[in-house]
Image (cartoon, rainbow, N blue to C red; front, side):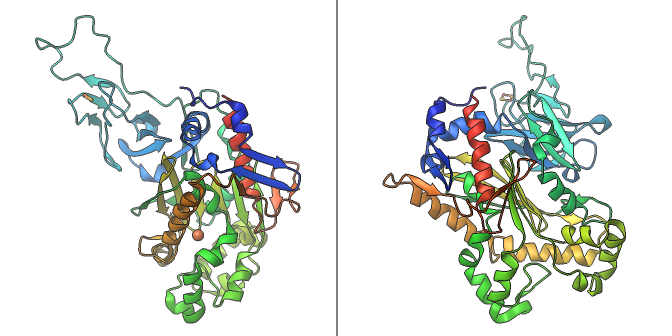
Length: 432
Ligand code: FES
Ligand SMILES: [Fe+2]
């Protein structure tokens, strides 16, 4: 599989990374050749998040997903083995499984009825021996195309078409700490994706979502209506523990806390320790937090209960209590799926409250997610002309610190996360 025809020197010119400045060319978001190269050089070369084990808890459960443009099926087979197959019939290429998830020992192709087992074997070619059927020498495919690399980290299933992809833990880097802290919010250290996800499409490039999930800078502007409502009506707008803060000044303070990191793997991270544990340890869910305090100590609990937002290169994020994925469909079309999750072992009322909080801000009728989608669309429209070349991603460029790990640490509203993404993007795009 090759990654498009665009030349490396053309790629290099799309990211301007110099002292005191950092700019990305408009074409990196809008150009079709760039998009095609991304499918080969990024989506087929690195680890791609394809699902969570709690979505397929039982033998023969499956879910469908994507690696770039490629539909795939994630299955749990005998012996709890998790496989990822290309969701394409070996006959004439129809998508084999059209359901989001389910349980099936076999998959029957909707087009001409070829049958595959849950572990990908082709077991029936319909009407094979009829007159006018297949030759005696028919070179029958053995089964579905299996994605060669699959690894699971604490329930997160990643797959890669690249046999030589780096070990998953190396790919996760600093993002692993954030995943651990999010999962350690559960007394059992596990999360469960059991609600139907929110799915939406926007008319814009996939990288807007990658950048936005760790962009604190936009919040007070894009979500102005929410901020105003919250200021005016406080918790009566239905605060289930998400976005606390009664007025704009308080929210601004909440926003610009902690640090951001852009990692060499291309991930963006935004994290801040909670200032005080007092409200948690005396509040409605005090028992739940005391269990965590005994397990991890106060300092670590302040991280666990802190912000912990990730944009995982290239297609997955964690924010509040959700896993979010985004999939490129075209240079100007992207699908976003938001999976709220429950904490295993946490009180039911807590998990219900968090789910309502997700509905409140991220659902199609919620306060927030639609605002962002609109920004992505107008961002793409703004970049569609050719009069201006550069997009500026240099906020905080002079206050970044490079850590020994190679992670670049910045102040909370710095664009260090985006710079981390684009440096990795350029590296992979140049490795044709
Ligand atoms: S395309 Fe699947 S059986 Fe023909
Ligand atoms: Fe937003």
